[in-house]
Structure formats: structure tokens, C-alpha cells
Length: 365
Image (cartoon, rainbow, N blue to C red; front, side):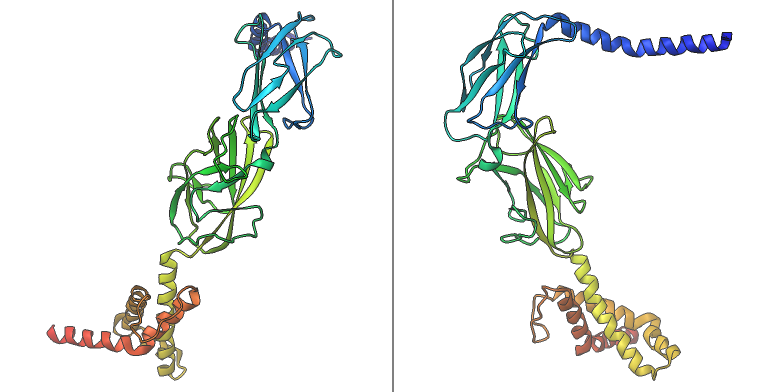
């Protein structure tokens, strides 16, 4: 082996040793203060059935081969109790102890099982588990604004209040029980919202499709969120809502928030102007005798007077959309209604009014 190869080999070994040193030191601290760990055997993730026991096991840490028996006492909770309230655990796979969760009142859906071990340092992680005791069966989500409608299916927009495009709304998510009363959670809940459009934010500066938030322990509402309706109409917008335990790994429930949004105001304005422009273009075409050159001459004569009039007519029609200025009331709930509105305003001689104004101004000059 050459000197260069030996040098490289030594450098690599030293680098590897350096990368391992912090990890070993951290394990040493943990092993010195915590004689063992307590594990809970659950059927599915952290979901439990109230009629099924929870099994607890005492395990040694990776450094220790043996851990002395210990008394484990469960912390009291307002909405449930543990039977028995204290157990003695020994280090043996066959010495698992069973406890049961007994509710004191209505099912809270989510609880936090905490315990302490006699003689162990308070810094040792004994037992602190969020447990799902039937959360999805007792809880449902509601947004604090009617424009976001909670639904079990993304196809259901019943009861959803339409929003104008680009409208910004502040809202929170609230947990309710089967009686539609606020449901406080016994453990923090992570909420993940996912939309098909960038309509979510917490600051109003950046808008994203995915936004996490939190429902704190003993609370029923999430942190404050912002929703901005898309610029283009969404007859069936959907925001998927996933509720997870504070670890963010185990699902508690899923639901949908549906919304209906209209076009932004400037889109309706452009459509109205387009209607007036189409009328001006048709009028120029009829006067051109199918001569393309003559068509553009008519359209742009007087430094584009017809186009300027069409723009002004469309803007005026949009401003007066809620009135019956023309003697008729159009349905402006659709884009077609706005297009026809601009077309009719141009058709009913608005251009003649602008021509008179123009001639008077030219005469004064």
C-alpha cells in the first residue's frame, strides 16, 4: 500500500469517527439518566378501542441489559381515567401489564395518556401518548365563514355562499361534536389543508396550495388562516382537510371544504368591453363592403375613435349593470350576460352620444 493510500485511509477513518462522536455522546447521556423505556402496544397506530386493553411493556435501554421493576402511575385527566391507576412493570416480554381507558363523560375523541415512573428522573420520557378513542365518530370540522362549506364529499356544494373572485377572507377551523357544540381536543392536532389553487395563506403575502395549521391542546379552533378566491370562477372548488396527531404521522380524520367563486370584477369588465368591441367591429365590417383595408380604415379612423368609444361604452355598461338604463334588466350572473350588456349598450346608439360630445369639443377648439 502506498503512502498516499495510507494517508487517505486514515483521513476517511477520522472523518467517520468524528461524525459518530456526537451520536454516541447523546446516547450516553440518555442511558445514564433513564434506566429503561416503557412501550405501549396498540392495535393500529395510536387508535384504540375502548373495550380493548392497552398493553404496557418495560424495556431496557440499548446500553442496559437489565432494568429494575418500577411502579408506573398514570396522571389524572378530566375526561377519562385509567384502570388500574398504577401498575408494577417488570422487564419481561411475558410480563406485559394491561390497563383500560374509562371515559368519565361524552367521548372526547382524542385523549393524552401520561404517566410517571417512581424513582426515575423527571427528564426521562416515561409515557406521553395521544390516543384516538373514536375521534372520527364524534368530531366534524366547520369553517367559521359560510363561504367555506364542510362536506363529506367534494361534490356537495349545498349551502355554500358564492364569493367574488380575488376576495380575501379570514377564517378558522372549528371542531364540533355530534351535538354541534365545540369539541376541545385532549392532545394537539395538526391540520393540513390542500387546495387545487394557491388560495391559502397565514400572512397574506404568499399564497399556496398546501397550508398546515394547529389546534392546540384543550382548544377547539385552529390558528387564523386566510382564504383568497381565485380570479377565475370556480363552480366547485375543493380544499381537502386532513387532521393528524401532533406527530403529524397518524391520520385522525379527513373531510372537504367546498367553495364557489365568481370571476374577479375585472374579468367581467373585460367581457363587457369585448361585447362593445364586437359591435364596433361588426359595424365597421358592414361599412367596408368586405374590403379588409377599408374595414381597418373605418375601425381606426379618427385615431381609433371607434375603439376608444367601444372601451368607454363597455366601461359605462359595466358601471350601470345593476340599473335598467336601456329599459331592460339583463341577467348578469353569467359571462354571457355581461357580453350581451356591452353589445346592447353599443347597439343602442351610445356611440352617437360620444360623436356629439366629440364634435362639440372640436368646435370649441
